[in-house]
Image 1: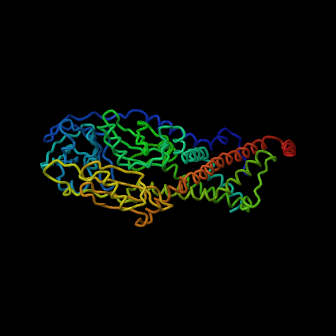
Image 2: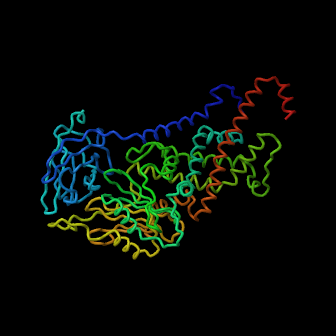
Image 3: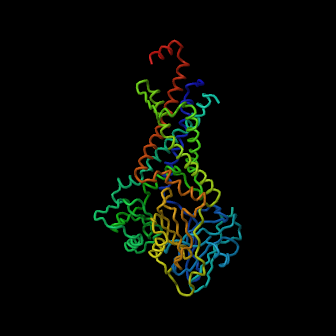
Length: 156
Length: 381
């Protein structure tokens, strides 16, 4: 065997990887902290419903398979979730037509009467003319829409 | 390659990461018994059945939870071994994420867990060291599954430098009275040879977890997504509830696969979503998710199904790897074997380090001490 100097480094270098084990404890601590979400955006009327949405974070959209998506929570403050036949959210200049939305499940509102979630269809990069569009269809077939402007800090 | 080079390579395979490797081995060893430990330490998790009642259908357990919490939105049901309760996962205004522990025999809700379960904690700690998931990957998952490379390296180099290793089977010899290093070396070598099969199983399954992670990360699907309900299947005009109940969906599934043992069930999350029912069958090597049925809640039809017979190569691998890695193939007895070999593997990373440590420290000492002294101390040993 090659002779090595009995230095602190030589005695301890193979223990260094053990320092990684500090991270799981840090991540556990982080997991136990209540999550902080951005503010809920102002409530808007979407047909018979009053809807407020809240992004899960202020980061850029992320890729999911072939789609770019952005996660939101949606609160149906006025009206019942069960009164919605199907609902979708997309970010862009225009709302995506319902026919197109129906062909896939990207951007579909899901969850419970208490809280709805959505992986909103998003562009890869935000532009100032983009808005967040909510499209809701009620049981009688009528379609209602509303939109929100993107916050300033998303456009940087 | 010379013997010395092989030896060096053996060291490089595991020494640099030995603490991390040891931690992963120990957490994995504990995770083998996570269900049994949950049973042992949490009375509420036990499905005690003193009157020898038959297990109630899952749909009734779901109804029990719905009655107890009328506003509950039930999303998922999980079943485990017959001695553990069934878990019904739900949310209400005051309980954002609750797990009802329902005794499937008595129908009693024994606990509502709102935190982390021991089973999930051990699995996450062992599987990805709790590194956060960035949508489709976790750095920790890569870190842990990459251990399969060093494990296979340590095994191969170990067998090369341990000439006639099969003697550890035919003439096992642990020399306990010839100094610490001899004892450690004997333990290390015998542990290694006796666990060749276990090292192979762990590194191959680990290699699969690594591959699977790469595929997840690259958005390559191994399993097809459950189909969607066509918008035209949902009636227009009057507000409607899906006519097919959860109980109906379960009956359809059991009629289709008489041996079906449900393990993981997801309720529809929106009007175009399906009942996603997963379970095991009578196939020995496949996991408890190898039978999958997606049922359209508006028509009652089986929209798609997966069984071991219809799986492709990658899917088959995916469904046989877990029982091999967890040691659940033959129930508690194989788990016990996996646990023991998990301990041996953890001990090997420690003994390996101690052998290396004593050698380097000794070498460094020898360099400092004059030749005569070192010869004397050799003689004394």
